[in-house]
Length: 77
Image 1 (cartoon, rainbow, N blue to C red):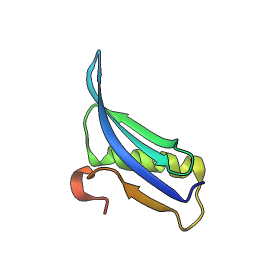
Image 2: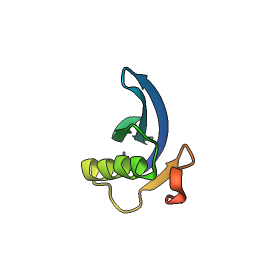
Image 3: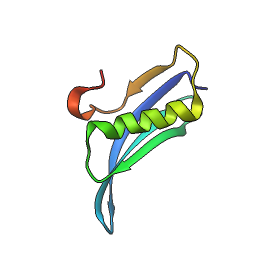
Image 4: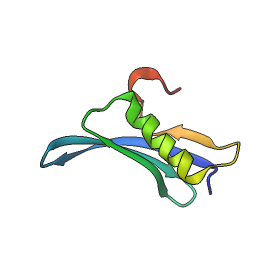
């Protein structure tokens, strides 16, 4: 647990229009450890989800993070 995380973004149709959902998933037990929901897909949606995951789980040094998508804005590499 808390050794490899991955992230992805999807979009959802709601009564208010499209919303974008970014999640961070622990690959060991497939637990969603962080998420962010916003009306626009910007780079901060991914950082918000990752920040939530980090503060909820406080992983030990050595955590590997992979991405399931190409992040917006090029800030995450």
